[in-house]
Amino acid sequence: MKRNSTKENVATAHVEKTTLQKQYKYGQLCIVTPHERKEISKIEVKNEHGIYTLNAYTANNGGRDYKLEGGGKVVLDAASVAGVVTSAGQPLAVSADKTHYRADEYATKEDLKKYGLDEEADPSWVRVTLDNGTSYRLMIGNALPAGNGYYAMLDDETRRNVVENEDGTVSEYYIIYILEATTSKTLLSGDTA
Image 1 (cartoon, rainbow, N blue to C red):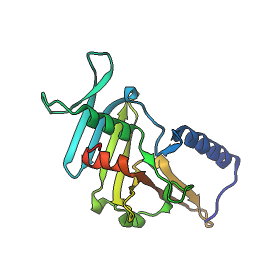
Image 2: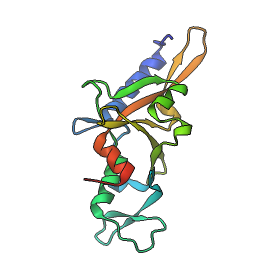
Image 3: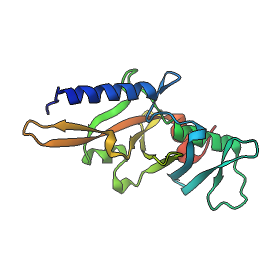
Image 4: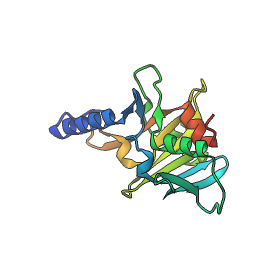
């Protein structure tokens, strides 16, 4: 593998550094740029219990609240909804060794299996749609051996490492993050405790 040092790559590195700076919140790294409750119009979650969707609406107090799609008059627990909205809008990465928030920056499609993120594993996921129409989907794979989080990746082609090989071909690699345990637990089970 070789890395280019062109002006374009330097500009890309600057954009990535600026983006990473925006991703820090309260001294922790969010896997995506953090989004507040007021920006999130829809959250879809697939976990061991199935798939559910939370749609935003304007509450009587003028704030934003969420209702379960197809849930009729089901009243949702406010703390659980708040936990899901925060975890989905600000998914926190944890550092494996105090400096590295990524378990693997050069994972191949074949490598996804060991993280539980391959198609066959049918991983859990959360898709967040913002008011501006953009969305992202965070795939959640296997638990870490130490039990302090889960492997995760963004299902987004712009979040891949692209490397020019010595023969002039280009290879794309997946970036595998370590998703913080509380965030993982909230999204996987709906449990905020």
